[in-house]
Image (cartoon, rainbow, N blue to C red; front, side):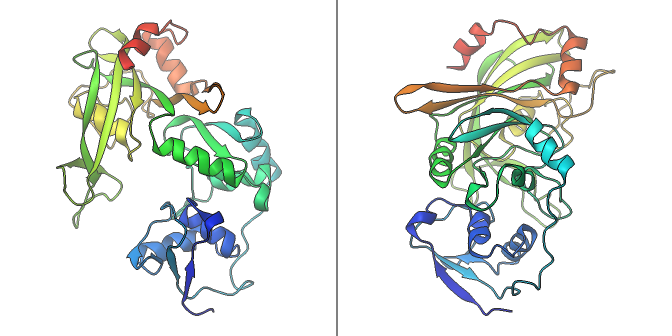
Length: 327
């Protein structure tokens, strides 16, 4: 076992996630161990507690607790041929800078407690070491759609900054219970992770400005189609990227997303529809210097296709009026 180390983040490690920093510095230490050490407060950044997805800046000091020596940890299982084939089947676009995947519902983006099958592990199918793609954003486990991974450290830095800002345009499709009133508008306010002895640490709740942990969240929405007053197809555009933001906001309007067991409303669920989460990252519009934006669209998962068909919604409909309402 090594002793405690206090290591400085270098310039070429700017904006890298804490877990990816560990992967570079200590490749024999699995993600699950990093996450566990962070939860216990043994990994610290500039003296403060840190999360695996926190991004580091040059000059920061990372406290690294005693770690097992190489050879003492169980080696991570190599990717099977079936998993590699599956990973490549998710690709919907790629160029020199990035790979776009159509993430299916139910597949976690990163590993954790009891999660061994996830996108981050599947990225071994595209290369190892410096050739291995890098995650630059996340989708909830049960949300499907466009997920971007960067091919180089430089592109990872550029894309991560775009996802943190508002120049990159994200469009989601959702099937919601009832019909929002008005049919186009915005939901905004502050949200934070639930706290308390009996709180679900994965749940977000409303918060007041200035409250500890409170983050501002803004979502624009527009109803594309509706089935009576029971269900509606809503196009969502998050202007911020908070945890569970779209799910929290639609439940707050009284029109929770179909299949969401965490954020609910009083509108009854129609019979005969899938109970899987109906939230799909449909499209990304990525700015490119000196060029037109790169537009990437992901086909819907099977359960949403079936729901669209059952409700008579046309996914090929001209949504110009929706785009106008969202801008």
